[in-house]
Amino acid sequence: MEVEEAYEEGENKQRKMTRAEAAKLVKKNFLEALKCNDYETLEELLNQKKIDVDTVFEVEDEKLILASYKQGYWLPSYKLKISWATGLHLAVMYGHLESLSVLLNHKATINCRPNGKAAIHIACETANVECLKILCNHGAKLNCFSMSGQAPLHFCTTLTSIPCAQQLIWRGANVNIKTNNQDEETPLHTVARLGIPELVAFYVEQGAQVDALNAHMETPLACAAYWALHYKDQTYSPDHHLICRMLLDYKAEVNSRDEDFKSPLHKAAWNCDHVLLHMLLEAGAEANIMDVNGCAPLQYIIKVTSVRPAAQPDVCYQLLLNHGAARIYPLQFHKVLQACHSYPRAVEVVVNTYEHIKSTSKWKAAIPDDVFARHQDFYDSLFSVCSNSPRSLMHLCRCAIRMTLSERCHRGVPLLSIPPSMKKYLLLEPEGIIY
Image (cartoon, rainbow, N blue to C red; front, top):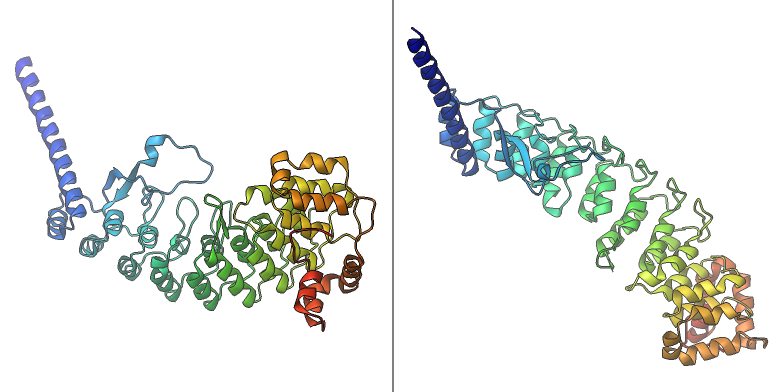
């Protein structure tokens, strides 16, 4: 009796193992069919009820196309390589329209998020507008959030995803939806930050708020101004410059302030971006606007000149000073030399804003010996002029005219009936030597 029971139990176990193995094989076949768009096999397996249409697979996903996680959470390294996904997610990721239609015809759950993203998020991230259309036609939610708090529009981040953004907006997606996370960023913030002028234009045409604020009180203009410098390679982005020009033309507030009271001009100054400084100042940016620490844009340029190899600090100083920026306190002039000793033109621009300024022991200490030797003619002229002797009469006249025009120098000087060389002189154009 005991022998028979033991035999029967072993047979049941073997039968169970066989069923488990069969289910595993079906799952493997289903996944292979998804990968190669074998929609006929998918249809057959689903018709025979051999597998649930919403079966979750574990697949490689090193680029996190399928996965989305909450900000600030620690994740083990293996979770950044493997993701969970249903057949619907995989069909969208691979761009297999036939397989996608088969799954949806078998009532696949369209808005499920096995690893933080719905299929519609993946369609936007992979810029597959045909998949997006099919998902929308089957009831995908246009404004649903991923686990990281992003709506489908926030995943439209490339030129190729413009058709996806258009489909979403035309079908009723909220163009001003904010991310459901600590950034609270609108789609306009996203494309301004990433530098996609075509989407900026489209969103504004569709009713995007030009001065919408994110969680840090930044407008899209402030985001574009800050990200105009690619920090890794220290190059400036023409696309971000174009976006700033567009937003200003759309009447964006040029003197908006973020949570640290920084304006877009502060952010342009932090980047030493003379193109953007000129654009913002011409649009009415206040040259003496101060942040929470009492720093004006001019102080920002001094702080970062030494780490902006592609910058033209002399042009930045010229622009700000010709738009009425306050001069550096004379006793702090050594800080200008500390930051700009390798840029004599920048030093010249700043020193020529004073009627007279006397050098101190800190000046020489601020200039490395090799730099002094490399630009000896200039620095000899600097220390010669900035002694107890007065500056030239021509320079004193320049200072008098500039004081009269004040913040109107940039507008007033070009209107004067004087030779172009004199206009350049009044606007602090550097000459390579001080007299």
